[in-house]
Length: 304
Image (cartoon, rainbow, N blue to C red; front, side, top):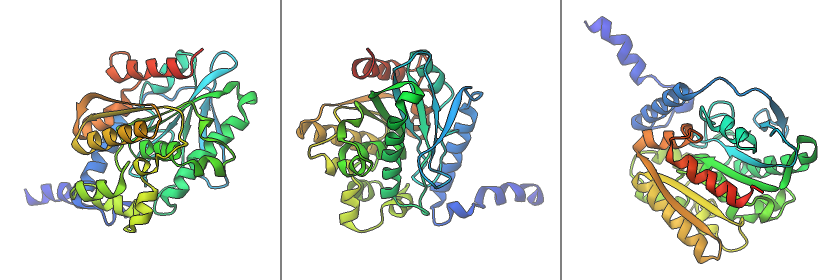
């Protein structure tokens, strides 16, 4: 019996080099998330174009054109704790096909990963990807004045950061209104010091790895603490029922509104890790409540 159980136990406690330094709970959560994402993938949507926006192998994005010219564009930024994830496997099973069918062009962005890159570099990657797409809008067939930036989890943090700290867009040669709106999907660490102080042991090591221990750097990487105008023109902040995500999303929305930037915060169904993954992988499915919420927002912000 022991010999039969040994391979299972070894598999349970073994971890990859990328997981070194993580707590046991973080490694288990990461693997659960990867399995859930893997089960959610549909066949790749045909017609994508791979576009480089920098020299690094990870500075690439996938682009799908809409049927007609001058379509609006939805840009998606994947999650993964700032240290994993990919443009090809974190868009969910229905997201791309749903937005293409609705008449939007769609792009999914890769970015360099921690620890080889910093979060500052990741945010600049997102801004540079937006700038590259805008610069090729005529060739790609979308309207550069009608873009919404969307991200999930760590990607939600990154899109919120480039939407609140104008330095990233400015370095890429753009103004804060380079996008019409920003949609963070169940992010956290919008206020990094608060996240680390209140988050407990779960994901603590991941946050410290990404943001370090310098309070000034943590503040600079906190969208909630960077909301002084100018910001992106409008925000739709979605979260599921988890304590840190709810608190962080609510505080970000309140801070944006206090700074004069329209921001709606909406709770959607789902709890815990499963709900956190579902808001990404189910978005675009017609019976998933967040789909209608995002559709209505996109219609208001970028549809003609």
